[in-house]
Amino acid sequence: MSGFVLAIDQGTTSTRAILFNGEMRIAGSGQKEFAQHYPASGWVEHDPEEIWSSVVTTAKAALKKAGRNASEVAALGITNQRETVVIWERATGKPIHNAIVWQDRRTAPLCQKLKKQGLEKTFTRKTGLLLDPYFSGTKIAWMLDRVKGARKRAEKGELLAGTIDSFLIWRLTGGKVHATDATNASRTLVYNIQENAWDNELLAVLKIPARMLPEVKDCADDFGRTEKSLFGAEIRILGVAGDQHAATIGQACFEPGMMKSTYGTGCFALLNTGSDLVRSKNRLLTTIAYRLNGKTTYALEGSIFIAGAAVQWLRDGLKVLGKAEQSGKLAAAADATQNVYLVPAFVGLGAPHWDANARGAIFGLTRNSGPAEFARAALESVAFQTRDLLDAMRKDWKGASARTVLRVDGGMVASDWTMQRLADILDAPVDRPTILETTALGAAWLAGSQAGVWPAAETFAKKWVLERRFQPEMDAPTRAVKIAGWRDAVRRTLSKQ
Image (cartoon, rainbow, N blue to C red; front, top):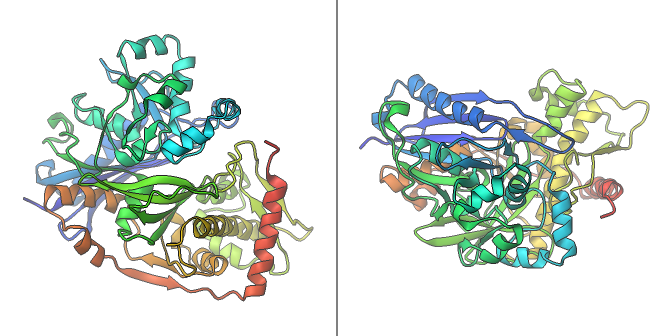
């Protein structure tokens, strides 16, 4: 059997499909952006049909560019934007509403209501998560309440719900398989991560019928076969993981204490804690890193809602950048005597603050502040937020050593200036790999290893190659002043919850 593996990387702003060859190198790829919909302040939606179309289009493009046919593909892996949720008709596969995106804040009032009822401890104990609009469960509840007739139809078994991977699996298999993997399930707010099962008590609180939800499988498992009519031949779907979990796998962070951080639209840092289900005392998330052969590996996670999106704001909102790639060069030209801080709480603040009502703010402006200072503040905000996460992880778990090496990936890591500043603020080494498509690679490895055409975890980890290590260069007093200024800026930004 050939070693070709197709990975579908369904992200927040675009869909990518990458065909890897037997040497785990890219043979062909396709990418397609899709529209972001903002129907109200703090609301973010995607059209599921547009997402579906982008998946089919990019998969075909990847095969065509590689000069390969679907019959030559040993397996398909899927990785997806997590927490984004769809409800669709069992009979037709048609969505009843736009997908509600992970960034969406519309369910903040429901989360507050549940908190006032004293239920957050119950949710956290069972799911490892906090009551925040970020997660899928309250989004499903919102659609069942707001879409006419949805709740009755769901109770009759006419509707199905799931994260994007589930919707894609349903469509790819022609409605034969309704499934997800343990990592995506662990982000729904209704999955018990210790028992590895949907939690009936939490489903009852949110009034979500259990029959709507998918079967939960290992990350490397049999998720069915694609319809022959889609690509010309059936392809086995053998790997699924949420994007941050797939990146953890793609970075070969298989050992407890290893840490990765992905810098895309947002920033998501995962610290492998092995078989230890670490209950955070510092408002981090406890999550499933991956589940293989029935064995669950856990992680501590810190979620930052705005990372690369801050650079997009500079480019598209303020128009101080022509291209996102210019941000590092512009930041390097900033006046070193100015301490400008951007707290990018455009959709609230994630870990460790979890303030859904906070909004973005800029501090330290002078008459001489300009595009360069704004660029530096935007990039530094990513480093400061990562430092907050790392500090919390070190407090929560003894396995997070003082000199933890951070493996990085995502669009922002191409900037040398940004990665150097990250190392400086963290006071820790930052490792950038040669293969930056780690999310897609992780999904491909799950599928390829399950198919028996790619190596097992230990051999795969040995193939991870460092492109550059960024060592801290900033002196301790300067770092301390900068971090103190950042924390003061955050304090001023937090809402009174």
